[in-house]
Image (cartoon, rainbow, N blue to C red; front, side, top):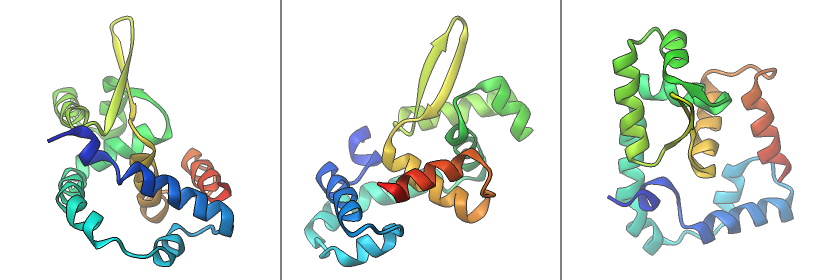
Length: 150
């Protein structure tokens, strides 16, 4: 499965949504989606990719890891410490997320740091984080404020 297909909606649709949000000065992305005409052909083409993406996210350990790398890039040992998972488990989950293009890496000597890979993934994780995890003083709240300002 191609990473681009799994990761994001059509770049044109995503850019169009951001432009429409700026034009209408809407803070709620759901209002934008409701105001756009539904493109059923695009939905049909992307439904399988969206379902695959949601299946990857339908795992509590993976969601925990993705929430943590939403705040800032982190190494495996830091993620293992914060989640209470064993390092091999963290590595295995990150490997799966990386293979599907949801996280990317940066190497510093022997340490590999993980971060979310794309804006659509960041947006989805930020919304999940907002509704299930975050207080207004956490770093992800700043990301959501930036999304609303665009």
